[in-house]
Image (tube, rainbow, N blue to C red; front, side, top):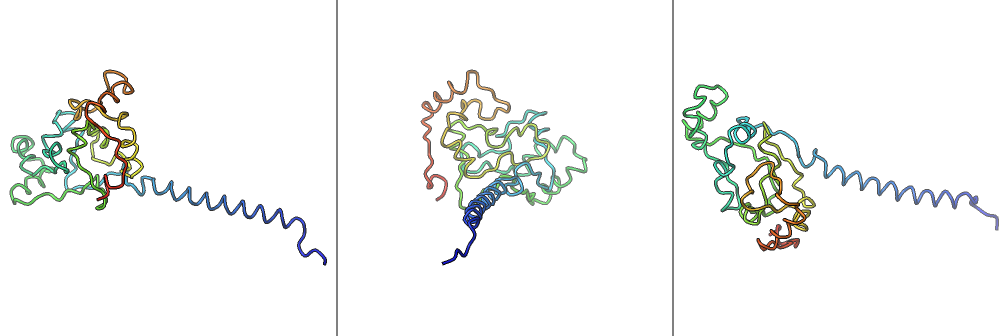
Length: 216
């Protein structure tokens, strides 16, 4: 029986299979890269707010502690958004006629909250508790970045599961003394490789990576 296909067909078939596999792998890789890009995660993206509050000024210049505004960060799952009264504690005396602060004055005058847009917005199926992370020695800067250098608030990290797991798997790389939780620009007094394991043991930190830790 005469040969139907030329010998080169075997090579062409092998090349086609390998090429198809490489193309599929490349597409999967591109999808994964896209899924972790700032376009999807919104990391490093400024969000328009009703008032462009500057953490760089209030925290960096004026030295206001995180807890002055975010009062429940040590005791609750939520850090808390400050009521307008907190703003007016200062701004009833400072910059009282500034046009940029009129939304604050109107909010206080009308007893109507400002509608802030959440920057760090986790999906509804993710459970996160601020208080336990604070108690276990995780600093604000670890997740939120150098807030004291942000003229406008942005999301510093991806907030994706692989980012969370990096810390949950190796907490010794990120833990700091509880006295330094709210310190911006913290630098460990000794190498983190030495201090981290000590604090993990002292604070009883577990490497929690089961699904039910965050998904409840």
